[in-house]
Each structure stands twice: as C-alpha cells, then as structure tokens.
Length: 491
Image 1 (cartoon, one colour):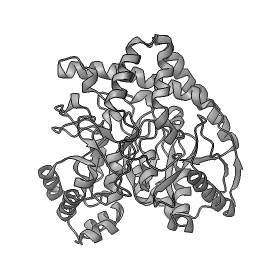
Image 2 (image 1 turned 90 degrees about the vertical axis):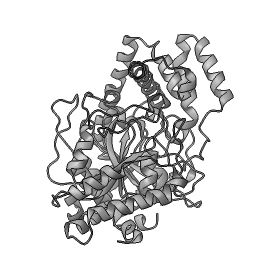
Image 3 (image 1 turned 180 degrees about the horizontal axis):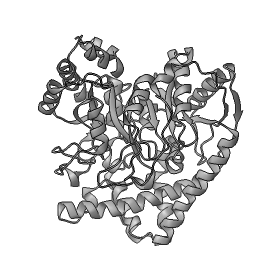
C-alpha cells in the first residue's frame, strides 16, 4: 500500500481492507511508522513509539471481525496507560514513571482491533488549551506550523490531521478534545459523563468533568469508535444510560426529525469572539434552517464567569491532590522550577481551599446541570462556536521566565481570599480563545465539534453542538446530515 492510499482511507476503510485481505495489519503499522518518521520532526506530536510491540500485535491479529482490525492508533500520554510503557502526563517530574497495567480504555481500544503504535504529546497534566511542556516541548499545527494545534489533546489532533493515524486517543476535561478538533479541522466528541471506561484505580476523573474518547477525520469513524467503546461500568462513579442501536448505523437512516435549536455566538464570560467564529455559526444555522429545523438566538442560561471560577477551583483541588501523589511516587518534593507554572499555581491555591468551599463549588455544577435540563425542555440542541478564534501561535500563551518568577512571588504573598481571582486572571488570556467548551464538562452533557468552516487564512474553525445528557444519537444524526452537505465540502 502506498502512503497516499493510506491517507485517503479513514479507519473504517482501512479495517475493511484488512478484513478483505487487501492489506495486512503489518503493512498498515509499517506505513504509520513511516509517517511518524516523516512528519513528526516538524510536528512534535508523538513523544514515544512502540515498534516492537506494535508489529508483534499486528502479526498476532487473528480476529478480523472486530470494527478496527489492524488499524494503527496513537494514545494520549495522560490517563491512557499501556502496561510496561512510560506515562509522563507531559511532566518532567514523571519522566521516568511507567504504567504497571493497562487503562480499561486502552483495553477496549485493543479489543476493538486497534494496534497501538505510541503516545502523543500533551501539556503538563492536561491543564492548558495548547500543547507545550518542559519535558517534550511544543506540538505544532499541521495546518500552519507556527500555530498550536490546541490542547490538551494537541498531539493527538496533530497526528490525525497530518495523516499519521486516522484516529487517536484523546481526553476532554474542559474542551481538550473539542478545542484541538476546532483548531485542526477534525471531529471531536465529548461523550456524556460516565459513557467511557475509567480506571483501574480511578472511579472518576476531575469529579466527572474529564472523559476519554478520540479524534477522527470522518463522522462514521467517530460513531463506530463510540459504538466500540461505550460501556455501562458498574464500578465507576458515573454511568450513562445505554443508547438503543448503533451510532454508526445512523449514517444509513434518513433523518426525519426536525429539531428546535438554540444558538449563540456570545462568549459566556464576556470575552471577544472573532467574526470568523461568528460566521461559522451563522453558516451552519442558515443551513439547518433551510432543512426545516427551528432556529432561535438564545442567551446562555447561566453565569459563565461564576461557573469558570468554580471550574478552576476544582482544578486547584485536583492538582493539589495530584501533586501529593506524584511526590509520593518520585520520593521527593516538587519545586516551582520543575513544574509548569500553571500546575504550580493551581496546586498551591488548592492547598488553601477548604472542604466547604470545594463542596459548595460542586453544587454549582449541579445547579447549572438543572438549568441546562430546563433549557433542553424547550430546545433540543444548543449551537455555539467551538473556539472564539483560530489557534494561537506557538508560545503565545506561555509565560516567560520573568513572568513565572513574578507569578510565584505574587502567589506566595497573596491573601488566600484573593487567590481564586488570581487564578481566573491567570487563565483569562487562554480562556479568551476557548470560553465555550467547559460548561458541558461540568453538566455532563455530550458535545461535538464539527469542522464546517475555514478562515481566509486557511485555518479551521469548528462549530459546537450540545445535546441533553445521554443523547449522542442526536449529535451523530445531525453530524451525518451536515457531513453530506455542501457546507462540509466548502470547509
């Protein structure tokens, strides 16, 4: 098989070639490694490869009836553990940490027939919406190399967008699948809370805000991946009600349902939204209206600034706890110089947050989830920009050494009462790019970014569609319809 043929096929197509013995799993894996060697020096998307393991898995593949038989895949260097291999979370402190067992998510990928060929880059502990860290450096966007692919699944997005693999494992705790999907022209679904495997040893991720899934180039790959991975996991903290039927089969069913859809292009935190992002939403809204859907402009039914402050409070508590685990694992205390400044600030503020404050913040999540339930009694779906602008340039959202020293000094002397506002202000430059994604993580709703727009600079911008909890079928049906439309072809 030629590389050009490999790139032309999505994962479903490659698996069909393996199934009909037109190509072998070994051939696909070999081409994937050739793509890594050719493209990764410019992208810095892949941080480790496992050639011996992958070729052994490919040769041993015998069940060609699984959905992704023989298809190469990359997984994310955080939470997606492969036994015996490093799992660094993009952190210098964890540079020599190895997984003692597979993540359940990884087990499900392998059961679906995927051949894991390596791990992708991520910002330290997945805390940034760009992919830059002290351990591996910055990942670059295949669309324009001086731009970031976003984060925290930036290595995954760059790998898929560049054609290294047709699908990559990703995760989303505040937009980390949807943001890089928007910035690189991919399809990015954040499933309903509790829909994907978690653990072992973890019953919840970020109190249910974070979830593992993947990034794809086609809707059918995304839907088939969903069918292969969706679980009802009794040991986990959260479960999602099973959906009837296959999501992939929705591609073959005419959609007779007409939805009532609310849309907004206003940032929930009052930050600017680029006119291209507004245009992206208006294009898709006009198309859906032409198809007979009822469309209405709506405001966000919650206080976005208050929500983000509670979101960052959770990040603070999680990072304080995580840092203690890391220090126990490495046998020494961390210092600011060994951490991303964002990690250090969040953890230090987290040590000062009371149990009462943390519990009250989680109650805000539940209140907003109830508000969104009321919203969906009137509107089937909500449409927003995925991101407020095209991808930032590499380095644009990173602090300089002088800025880091100033931040460290300020946090050390700042009254506890003022620290939460300091965290919000620290994140505001990056939040300005991505204010639309976090609330679905806190409410637990499914949300998808669709690549329906390209700017005059040739950069992708996604449009986000959000459904009620448990209704990924609505998102996939709409995505299949849009993928077949002129709107998709012109993006």
